[in-house]
Length: 426
Image 1 (tube, rainbow, N blue to C red):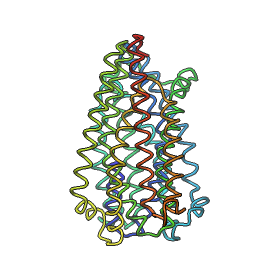
Image 2 (cartoon, rainbow, N blue to C red; image 1 turned 90 degrees about the vertical axis):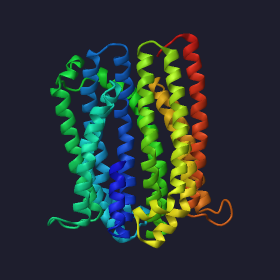
Image 3 (cartoon, rainbow, N blue to C red; image 1 turned 90 degrees about the horizontal axis):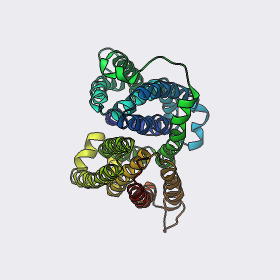
């Protein structure tokens, strides 16, 4: 997400076309990446259960099979990115934007395998309470990303000015660098020897365990990502300025989301470890504490964004039309972020209990049934008087996230109480 912020800010200072390209291209790539990332994220609760229960030797086998799964999924995900030129015309984006987006996605297709395999490394390290390893790698990657994106998007040191496509080139280099560094460290550091990490061909029993949890997680992630991508694709028909303004606020939403996402991962990891150790009461207390902290952090974030909204938008763009659109969407971002943070923590906690179906059903009904469908009717169909445009999409997506938050928190309260009453940890 920090990578997206870097590219969006730099593209905004390149041109409005580059900013629109970045907005549309990032939305498409994120849909593919986030959807597939759901499957690799299943490694976290599985490995955390093993770690909490002291089954250390099982961790290595799960990790290696997770890498194989990431590679297979990446091969599938590359197809729509490589052939984006065949389906992009359906969305009626401006011709110059469409051509750049196709090039942008072809480059990011090459980044996808490295990105997904690094997510497997991320999931395993957070599950065994070693988040500092991936944090160090990601900070180093962010520094490299800033330098490369600046040089390739805006041009410098004799390198050509590639605009938004330069950001994709930088991302491909950084993702593969992160994977190779993480892979090498885990195979050389004695810290991981207890996990019995050995080379192995794909093994169906272990892959099946990952996929049984990973497939519904992947569907749930995809529903979240595509519901937001739908807003961007529908915004394409409203012109470059609206697309750019939407991208500024969408990118700001992604930046704000990093805190609740990190909190969700930490909460789910500690909850899963408690479940694996057979301590359901500690698991429930951890989960509820994570939800309370998530709500508080989201409220503080919303207040900060609202207070600093003018300065924040100026950091992204100097185009007055783009800035005006972005400022009209900031109020919707406030509600969007608060409820998104709450439903995210609840979703992750349920997955720590290996309950992935409930979030999937809720996301399908709320985000697509109410958010996208209702948003389209409000934005373009005149459901509530004159068409609201892009603001209607943001409004209904915020309402959908509020519904998802209420439902998922309610489901968790029921599950948590039952597990404690039965004395079951999983």
